[in-house]
Length: 153
Image (cartoon, rainbow, N blue to C red; front, side):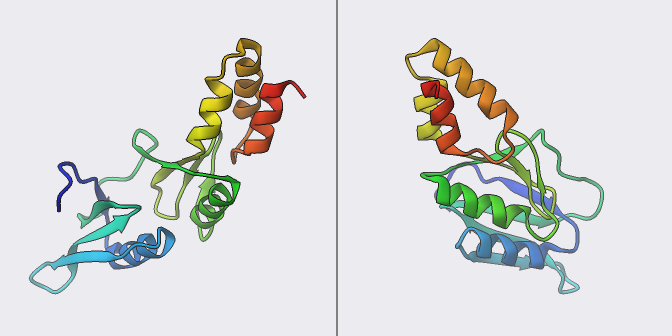
């Protein structure tokens, strides 16, 4: 691995399923696996959008929470829609302001940074406030609605 920091996600015995799930959702691949002496998978490395994540089969002691989330910077509405639909399917859950939990309870922020920069950080103070108000009412972020609110239309 060439990255200095690798996120490690703690799973129970569903690690093989989780590794395959993340490789499928993010069109990546499982890049390495290790096993306990009894043959069960201990770790799996998964490429998620160019970042290696290590999944650890650590047992049932710890669960995921919103205190840690992963931000997906989406280039357009189609990409937002893909990740939103895919991550909330099969037991995932929607939240507010672009946040979702996947079927394992991992939190993701699905947001278009370029559109957020244009609307929430634009030069028009009143437009920024309108865009923020609009975003706070959304579950899935909709670029056109942020831009419309910013423009005051």
